[in-house]
Length: 299
Image (cartoon, rainbow, N blue to C red; front, side):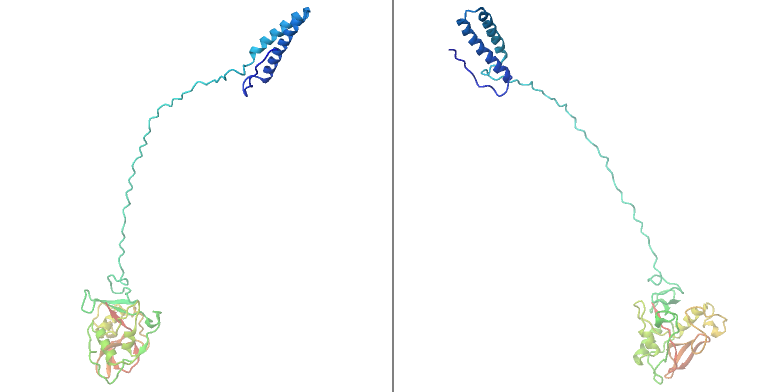
């Protein structure tokens, strides 16, 4: 009896079918060899060696399962990376130069507080009618309120009022020259505290936050009358009404009486005060008369 050592088949390697076939042939060869020994026939003598020879031929083709596993190591492949020279990117430097700032100087108008000329719109919403040429103790310019000054300058007729306090002499209201009208008005308001008189209306007026209005003095009203007529020739406005000029500025009217009569702040005596007649220059009237009122201011 022959003992055959069988090793565990590897999980990977030759074909399972070939291994089984080889083993079968070897076993068959062994059996046949034993059979030959016991058989005297010619056929067995011939066949047995052939079977045994076939088993010997097939057996070596089968991988020996007991042999150590052969590991095929693939040749190591070395990849050489060509050295890369660092690339230096040079960024062009950009210098931003801020554009030049252009400063535009806007000249202030007379109404905005700049220099004024006769006829300009004034800061108080009226018109400049007199320029002293340089700054005086009272200011430099005189501005007359707009026509309709009590009605948001709508061009309506000026209000009428009495001068006030007829029969009473007001101390300090005797100024005639340019620059004295404001002082006259202050004295009238103090010495004759009657609501609604001409000086009171003028003193209470305010426009564009300006509340320094007053009744003009005699000379201040003469300057106003000359501007209203465009009179640059006569010392007295329109040469006492004979200058042949037309009343053109300020919204004053020569139509009707006493429409063209305006109270001034100069007090002649306890009963009379001066007023401006736009037809025939200045006149005097009783303090109780109802005449027109147009305030002015100095700045």
